[in-house]
Amino acid sequence: MRLILDTDPGVDDALAIMYLAAQEDAEIVAVGSVHGNVAASVGALNALRVLELVGLNPPVAVGAARPLAQPLQTAEFVHGQDGLGGHAGPLPKGSTVAGSAAEQIVRLARENPGELTLLALGPLTNVALAVLLEPDLPNLLRSVVVMGGAVTVPGNITPYADANFFHDPEAADLVLGAGFTELILVALDATEQARVGTDWLSALAEVRGPRADFANKLLDHYGQFYSNMFGEHSCTLHDPLAAAIALDQKLATYRTMPLGVELTGTHTRGQVVSDLRSISSDAYISTNAGTGRVPVKVADTVDVPTFRDLMFKSLKG
Ligand code: BDR
Ligand code: CA
Image (cartoon, rainbow, N blue to C red; front, side, top):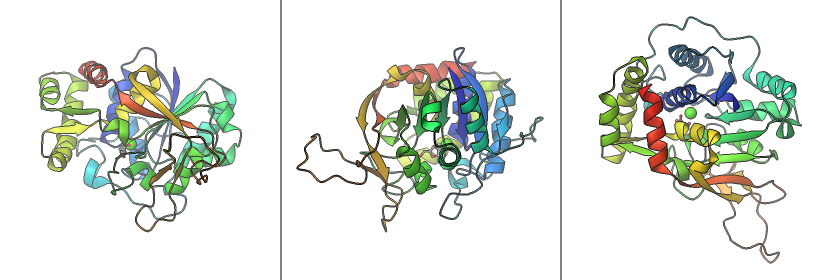
């Protein structure tokens, strides 16, 4: 599988890159950074750092510095000031390429029609801009896999919204309504199942090697944040699960439904709007979430043991 990665590294983004790098059947064709966990310029450097650690050298383009319609808000309180839990280290050897992440998506999709999967692990600003630049993008990409949203479960950054959708609700709504041939949403409904606990974390802490050492440092930081929240030693591997599902859809079951994002709610901005009524009757009034939108595939039940095992092996090196 050939992937364009759109990302805001970010601890779990970094772990997702390490996961992908360990899969023989995956090729990261290009990477774009986006604002989100940290500034887009910081995220691009972090992407380069992690790619260098795992021996990969795809082009990395800097993406959108801010959301479409609201001020920039970042999440260093989760991922650390440098986005990598204080372990970013020296500057990467490589540098970013010219052109924006959105332009890179459009160019690659045009050059490889129907071949590339776009894996989006941050706010969807770059993807929305790419759709605006190339309205035929939904037909040019083979598939889009998005980590974001909370469909039937509470949010994380607010009671209603996940961080990725909250950091750019307009972009998320645009992407969900763009009509991609295949869009898989790996929302908190799925990722909250993909938590790793003391046993898993302690077993990885025993492993030595450049990849495992780096992963353990990241997980120490990330685990502390989540442990404070959950009251037990554990953390949630949002972006790695989306990466794993992008490579193997059999890791989850799916529900198919049209979706939108709340843009005007006083308390609920960034919330996924879904019509969960299990009927298809004209007697019910359509909502914005449903009207005329191509349904997306929402990851439902995750094969958690298999995912934990795959993730452990990839970080072990
Ligand atoms: C998402 O928000 C970010 O903090 C994580 O990297 C992940 O992509 C989870 O809501
Ligand atoms: Ca992310």
